[in-house]
Length: 122
View (cartoon, rainbow, N blue to C red):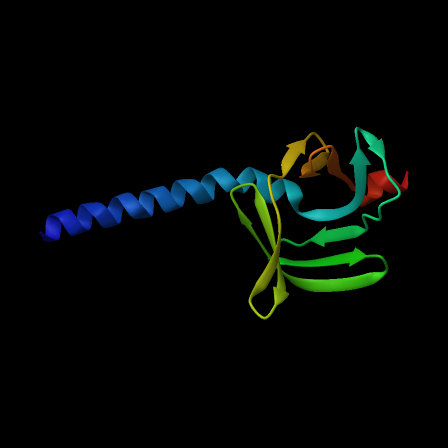
């Protein structure tokens, strides 16, 4: 019985490690300062996007419509969870890294594109 419990624990730990290792490239890629632009059918919209700084220490600063918000972030697979206090979170699902850009589908026909803040300023 102990052998079965040990084997089960080993498999669980190995799976947890492989998920963390698989998330590492995306996690490293999203760290930095970003300008967010909303796109509808590939064209920029008037919908405000704001800026976000994703920090290596697991914190973020997001400015949307002039209002800054700070908190902790976590990546679960390709979904970015932004902690908003009180145990709640805003979830930005299915982030994709495409070169120096990060994209995500907001809803059908509208996407969000992040560009590095330094690149957006040029």
